[in-house]
Amino acid sequence: MRAGTAIVLIETLIIIIIIIIIIIIIIIIIIIIIIIIIGATGTISKSFRKYVNNIPGNHEVKELQKTAILGTANILQKVLT
Image (cartoon, rainbow, N blue to C red):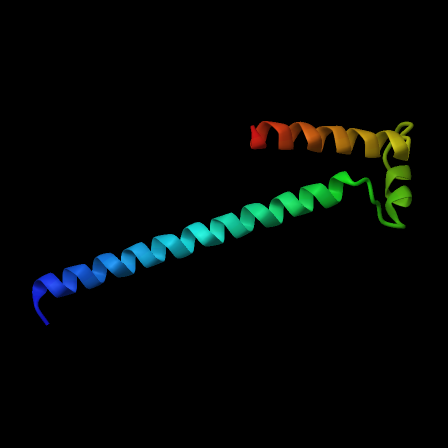
């Protein structure tokens, strides 16, 4: 194999690796956005109220859900614009 051919092969492999890394990053970003959207829908686990009751102070679950939705909407707006 000639030196020129080896260099072209190495460059091609580097480009393929970079493309794979970019695809992985895009998939991770999509997964994070999906997690944020699911969290922003306001769904809570059955044991959530029990955990909230352990936190000192008066906390309304509906207010916490509203805060989570508004906060997530704010983050998504900043990221997507």
